[in-house]
Image 1 (spheres, rainbow, N blue to C red):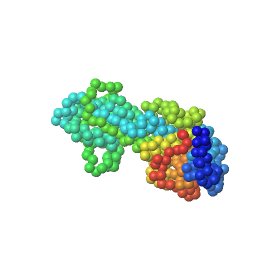
Image 2: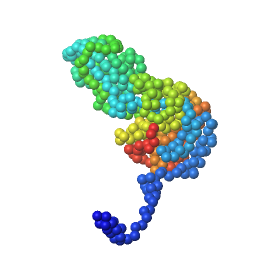
Image 3: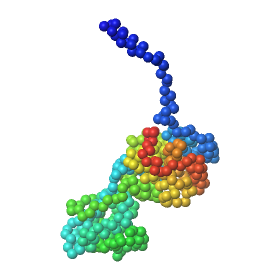
Length: 406
C-alpha cells in the first residue's frame, strides 16, 4: 500500500515542468482597491488661502470620504443658524419616514339636503406643516363636488391643524373658513388662486355657524381625506425658503430642538458635545453645531436618499435652479446647499459632486463679522473650487452612498 501511494505521489510531481514560485499579488494596484486621486496642490493652495484670510474663530471643513481638503476648528461648535434645518431634515425623515404624507380628514354631522349640510363640518388636522391657500381651495371645491354649498352648523377643527404656517389653531380655523367661500376672499387668496391652473373652480362653501376648536368629536362619518405633498417635497420647500415656522411645525411632534437632537444622536455617530439645539429653525446663537457634525448630517442624508433612488438635491436647494435664500448668491451651478444667517453669523454647507474625488462635503461657519463679506468669500471659494474641479452631474449622486458612517 505504501509503495502504491509513493508511486502516485512521485508520478504526480514528475510528470512535467518544474514548478515556479507563486508571485505575490499587488492588490493595491487592482481597480477594486484604487483610491480617488490625492488633493491637488492648486486646491490645497486655494483652500489654505481662504483659511489664512479667516480669523481663528471660524469653522471650516471640506472633505470627501477619503481626503480632508481643509479644516479649521472642525470639532468646535459654532452658531449653526439655518444649518439647523439640516438636522431637522434628518430627524423628520427618521420620525415620519421618507414616504410619509400628512393627512387632513373632513367629517360631518347631519344630513346634506339641497346643497346644505344640516349640521357641523369637522376638520381633523394631521399636523400638515404645508397646508396653504391652495390646499384649502382644493378642499372647498371637493366639498362642492359632494353637494355642499352651505353649512348650517359650525366649522369645528380638532387635532393639529395649521394653515399658512399659523401656529394658533383658532386663527387657522378662521383662515380656512375664509378660503372655503370665494365671496369673502382677500387679496392674498386671490393672488395665490391666480397661480393655480386656470380651470380651477372658485369654491363656494358658506359656514353659517361659528368657527371653533375642540379636542375631539363623536363624528365618525368621513367625507374626505386630503393628502399633503410627500415629506421630501415639504422638506425641500422648507430648506429653499428657510421657512422657520414650517420647521417648528414639523418638529412639534418630535419634541422641538431637544427631540431633534436625541434622534440625531441615535442615528449618527456625532459626539453629543458637537450638537446643541434649542429649536428646529436655527433662530438663536444657542443652536450650536460643529462643522464635522454638519458634514456627518449631510452624509447621512445623501446615503438615505441614495437608498431610495434619490439625492441630496431632493431635500436641499440647488444652486442655479432654486431661488429662495440662493436668489442673490453667486455660487456655481448644480450644488445642493443650505445657507444660514443671523445678525453676525453666515453659514453655508452642502456637497460638490466631482469627477476626481467623488462627493466632497463642506461646512463653512463664519461668525463675528460682515455678512456681505462672509457671503462673498464663500461664493468666491466655491467658484474657484468649481473651476479647478470637474463638477459632476447631480444624476451621478443617485445611489452614491457614503463610505463613511455618518
